Image (tube, rainbow, N blue to C red; front, side, top):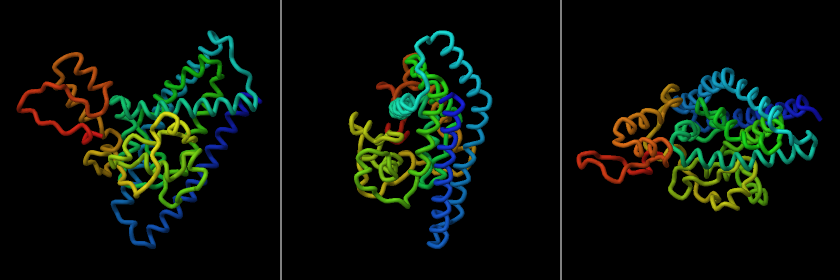
Amino acid sequence: MTADSITLFATNFDDAFFLIGGAILVIELLTALFSGSLRGRAILDMIASATTQIPSLLVEIFLMSFLYVGMVIVADTFVTWQMPITIWTVALAILACDFVYYWEHRVAHQVRLLWTQHAVHHSSREMNVLVAIRFGPFEGFISALLHFPLILLGFPPALVFAGIIIVLGYQTWIHTELIGKLGPLEGWLNTPASHRVHHGCDDKYIDKNYGGILIIWDRLFGTYQREEETPHYGLKRDYDSVNPLSVWFSEWPGLFSDLKKARTFGDAWMYLFGRPGWQPQSLPADLTLPAPEQTR
């Protein structure tokens, strides 16, 4: 196997799940059309989801290529223990990328600066396949950066990027309400039922089921929640915009507002890197703030 062949495999894998997602989307649209639920707002929400690809693709064009070249230079110059590309190292790389994705995803929910990007994915009140491509502008770039330690462990950059593509590509089909629970697969794989939980804003569903392909990471690290009642989707706070620009940058106004009222460097640091909803313990008496969960 070569770097080119594994890149082609990852691209074909992504394309295959994109086609599966496309088929599910057609069924979703037909179901909504015949049930009478395909109304103007639902269509606008789908359009807003699709438009998030515009800034994401621009970031990929102007930043991701430089990042990949940088990873190749680091790997070739400093990492003398690179693994060969074989069927076994490909499988190991996918497993490693899935593991990193779990922690990357979990951290994106816990660090407010990262949440400004990932919240875009959670901002829809709907659950359909188009939500799968609803990304913050810098989310892909941040993801690639957080996978950088795999390069230092000896994984060739081509394997790491292939693993990232495969883990994300797999998740296209799980953003749907059309598919119910899948029996024994629920114990191992991230399924539509598990991922509906992840998008739920109900208290019992918040910050659960971070896995990409495998759900076993959530079971191992205590973040698994099975689907019980149908979740309410979207952010915990009252956000329901279908304006593309608002969707792209939904979390930035709140962050800038908090930074402006920071009274110390420590406050500013926590507004950026603390949990979403963090507020100082002592505030002016006349300053009314939302409860932490309302900022999610």
